[in-house]
Image 1 (spheres, helix red, strand yellow):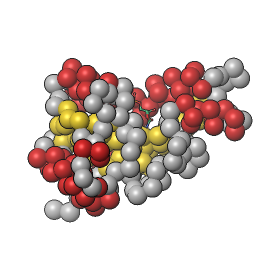
Image 2 (cartoon, rainbow, N blue to C red):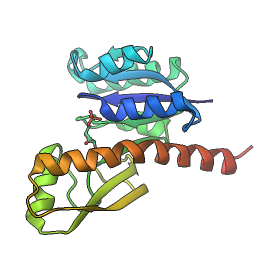
Image 3 (cartoon, protein in one colour):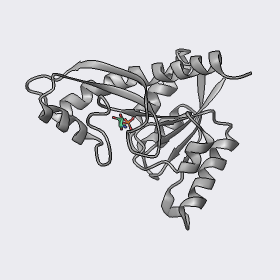
Length: 201
Ligand code: GRF
C-alpha cells in the first residue's frame, strides 16, 4: 500500500478529501504523516480525526535550510512515505526533498496552469485573476512539483468549471474547491496505477 505524506499550511480540506478517499477504498493508499509549517493550522485537526500523526515543522525552527531539508527528509523516510502531496502548502519545497522523491511530489492548484499560477498566486487572488481575465471557464491542475512555484508538468488537469457573470472570487473559489476535492484523489490514484504498471522490477 502506497504511503502518503501531506504538507499543508491551512484548513486542510484537500487533505481531508484524500484521507476520505483512502478510507472509502477509492484510493489504494493510506495517509502516513502530515507536516505543516503552521502550528495551529486546521490540517492538524483533520489529521487527528483520521488518526494520522501530524507534525509542526517549519524553516524558522532551524539554523539553515539544509537542516530543515534534512529533518523533512528524515521525517518522511521514517514514515516510509512513497508520495508527498502538497495540499495548500505555502512554502517552497527544499530541492533536496525533490531529489529524494523524484517525480513523487505533487501539488494541486485551483486554476488551469500555466495560467494564473506562480509566486503570490494563491487563495482568492487566483480566482480574482481568472474573473479579471474574462475567461469563461476555469479548472484545477494537479502537477509534479519542481523548483519553481506552480511550474512542474501536469499529471491531471480538469477544466470546464464555469465562471458566471456575478461571481465573486469567494463564490468561484467554492465552486472550484468542490472539483479539487474530486480531482486530487483521482490524480493520486492515476499516479499509483502508472507506478505499479511501469516501475522497474
Ligand atoms: C486549495 O485551493 C489548493 O488548490 C491550494 O490551496 C488551497 C488549500 O485549501 N493549493 P485546503 O487547505 O486544502 O482547504
